[in-house]
Amino acid sequence: MGKNTIRSITAVGVLFCLLWLIGLGWAVGQYYAGKPDKLPETNTVSKKVENKKGLTIVAIGDSLTRGTGDETGKGYVGDLTDEIKEKTKKPVQLTNLGINGQRSDQLRKQVQETEVARQIQKADIVLVTIGGNDLFRGGQGLTDYSTANIAKIEKQYLDNLKFIFEQIRKNNQNANVFFIGLYNPFIELDQGKEMSRVVRHWNYDSAEVSAAFPKIVFVPTFDLFELRVNDYLYSDKFHPNTKGYRLIAERVASLLTW
Image (cartoon, rainbow, N blue to C red; front, side, top):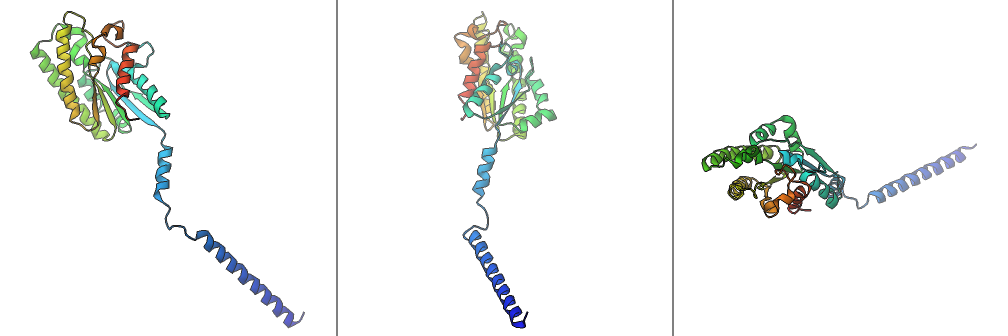
């Protein structure tokens, strides 16, 4: 093979190589043409919203939080959870930390526990029922509701309530907190009217404490039981029955922003 032939083949090879490199450069340039240096952050935000798994609810307090008296075992906490699932079409994680017979001084200690604080910290909604055992004292409140005694009991209760709310807000500043007010289960007894006056005053002072904190909502229940209390009480004539708990759940649900 002559030198001229080799030179011709080499020249053709170099030419094809240059054409290939030029074509590659043009293709790459077209691919990236007009693309921003940084992807829009709105895509990332939207993805986070879409990936949010659902809501976390933590319930603390006494036997009303546990649902004592509800034949279905749900209580108002379970009824409310079902309604939230139905309305939002999202999964709901519920942690019920209620304790039968719990008073405000005991709840004050409970909210300081490490695991309880951790549960509250991750909650979207916190539900609270407390105060009934402080006031009624297993029925003793019916025979001992003198102004002096009630004032002393209420002062201790309000101090505990304020501390409980402070602990909730210390661990979680953003959760919506729903604090359930008291009803009067003894309204149809001889002392019923006097006890109603005490309960209304108790609720008013409780609502004033809750109003001092952001996103803590007092939920009144007194009126729900006032006219037909026996229709909504369990056989112990103290705790709500299934219908009574359902009324409370509907009242809380009406305050939620769907």
